[in-house]
Length: 295
Image 1: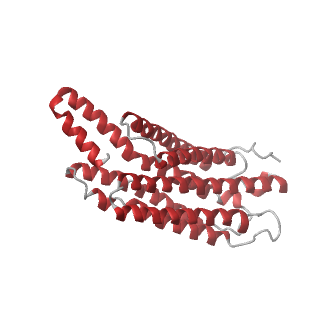
Image 2: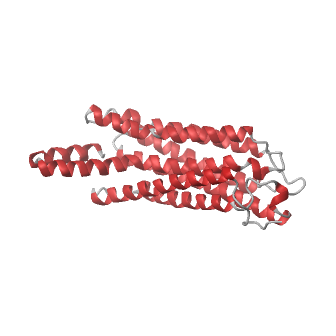
Image 3: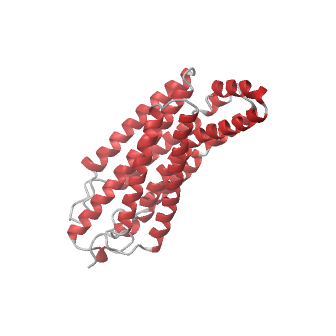
């Protein structure tokens, strides 16, 4: 039998891995531009930036684990994977993958909420709502970690190894995360339209924040796959392909979308620099406008 880590990748896993690699690369580039924006605009680095850095590092590790899984038997029948020891290792890698997913989602959402607190420091409604959902996601993360390691550790290769209904746990935790995602996406929108800026800028910022809907769509797709998956089937290596791939795509897309507003600020700074070079008298107006809005 083929040793663990020496299996050929099935076509579906190849397409999943390529797609996730492209998205992860784009996320790394956008996060790099985010930090560059902080530097050149002298905005300073905050908790939101530190959590974004942590999130992208976890996202890269998550992609690496998916790559390891793709050559360790995912997509192949159990009979082709190996003996019980190899199956146990595969299950442990899947569990590590699930933990990285929780950490990537958690750090990304905390980063977004800290960003809201930072830019809307004078808006008590937004700040209090952000703090409430920081607690919400922290509790969600702890519950998910406990579920993975203390309650639902999946020892699928042994008789009686199923200690809980993993499908129910995964689906319910995903639904809670989806609810939080929707709130986080919509939270800053009313505050944007109360800022003193032109309507065109408000529309652009609203669109940037609403790009998080793409992440929500991926999250819904992952939940649908989880609901349809037969967790009682011994062929878990075949049925786990899509959920594992979506679990990499979702947080990396989230990281990408969460940093786009800062990249917008960088692009605006470049545009303002070029404009003021040709129109020196407009420099002070542009600078004051940017400092007022934080974008």
